[in-house]
Image 1 (cartoon, rainbow, N blue to C red):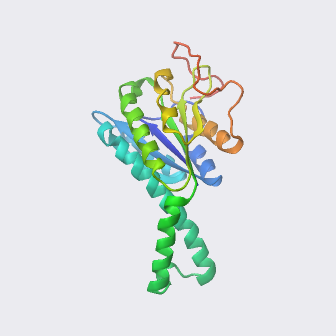
Image 2 (image 1 turned 90 degrees about the vertical axis):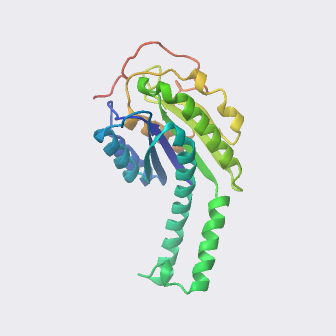
Image 3 (image 1 turned 180 degrees about the vertical axis):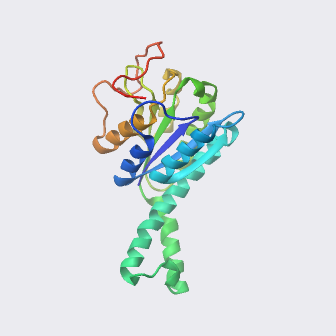
Length: 246
């Protein structure tokens, strides 16, 4: 199972539509969940609608939360999406057997067996989760909460029986790239600790192009030659990624 978890606090303003990018992810069998993070006030109607639309197009869930609820929300969404993915696969198999029937049409004993299988698979099926973090300037006060939440999520995934791998990206990049790979696929929670001191907050929010970059990583296992693990180079400008239109 494959998931993208996007953590943001506002609207995209550069490049392709993030809703279109999420739809491409779903076509590739990747679910996109979105968490909108607020401290005071709201993300705004436009931002809230975009968050909901991205998750809907990506077959996932969306929530808008304050930083105190972030860790719990990330864990809930990740696990709930795993269960939903398995349930969808089971329902397809049931339909092959029953035609137009559904799980509810099975005898109680058989239905109970299917539910048990879904529960077991939720804990044992392999999972790849790519975290995509909005590193625009407005997210800077929330970064510590994001860091703590990701560590808690990694610890909770370690408790699963199945293999759970996490990779971490932030956007925008520091050299004109829409996203940077901070940590490649790993099952080791300690790998996360060195991440956040290296992220440089910037102004633009190329959410759509960033999602497409993560899709490349799912497909090919690596980004282009300019991306390195724990990106070591940064610039201090606010610049907007080249080659994209607002």
